[in-house]
Image (tube, helix red, strand yellow):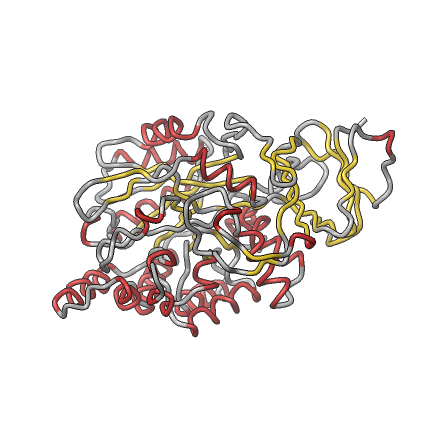
Length: 475
């Protein structure tokens, strides 16, 4: 007897969208069969989700929980922890988060991972993993440590090509060290995840705007500009062409130039993948001028309507593969404390409404297929990040991570209905669906707005990048 069967006329499977019964046994999907295959005697419970969308649980490959946040007075706070963000994720139909283990100067990679375990272990409602984040001047010993971490199941390494702001000096990795990291990651069959901006241009624009007295955060797009993204992406790609076996994932692509650079590299057969954020798809630099306009910001910056249009084109054609959040969960008074181009808080509150908002915009307004939508919010992230088919698929043998979206819960996003913070940049947005049920590894984690999961339910996921992803053959 199955533990649970979920039945719907719109089940998104690797084979397409069909009327199916999804049968769960323990933590796994035991079978996917034609709707009505399994009767009342076949399962302890049958959930009839006819008329609803049944999909793999969402995967957000870019979040920052309990994250270091510098403030204008020189103090430092840490943003909300995994317990807050992962709870909101389950309410929103997301079952897996990927955060970062940050290697500070003086720490080994393994020490960074252990410190991150302290923040996450038994404090997360959903499943999770980490990218390894390296910064600044890299000591020679770190390269072998990275190799060991990749072999241990942490195969993605994040690299910055800018310090981002003048107060964060030491974040950028120079191209000599990037070359060395690329060689290690290629040898060990990993993937580099890139924050690509040209530091010379970014810092020049900070100096220029401060000199001219144009320091308000509404000028952010002039500092973190489209030219900077173009120059950095293309320099990274030029370096990658000289390192056989390297695969790249560009995080938070924000500009048309970035989309074009990825498109051209992929046309040459390079294994290069693109991520954008729902902020960039839904907001532009004009939104900085709105009340509390810092709400809409994350680094690099919001760009123009033309940039936004090209990002949408990238999602449609397969140049942009994932839609993430760059989640940084904090209160409104923290998000808006910075008023200047050089002190505005990055990141955003968005993990809970991401799936519903992207369904609304992609399927409801732009006519994307259900399969394309699911690829962008779940399946592609699983494939690229080394989790597929364990995650991101409704198939026999996969983890029983399931989101059920109810079109009957169409409405308007209000911050009072969310579970992350005292504000939401998504306040007032119409949504055509809302999650009615979230299942994590066979356990009903959220049902009809009631959280049933525990903070000890989340499990650390060790990963391995598939050879098809590393060759560029899978996507």
